[in-house]
Length: 109
Image (tube, rainbow, N blue to C red; front, top):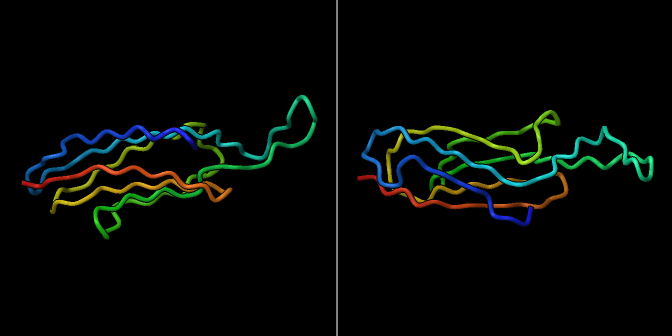
């Protein structure tokens, strides 16, 4: 989780009431814990993204708890209604406790 996530917002300067679409993708191996390492024969330890949250200011817009069936480099897309300006904050957390975050400013006209 060293590389910054890629984030796209349909309109950073929407009108009040406009629906915004957000696309985000981050790099993560998403190891399920069900595969064995061919070199050692041991099971690879499980490490998946266990939580994603998107907030605008203090308001929670979207949360997601993916399971082991999600492919590596998870992509997420969600929509919300632009009601007020603020900082769109997104955070990913994996099972090893690592976190990754991204921010986008939303200015509602």
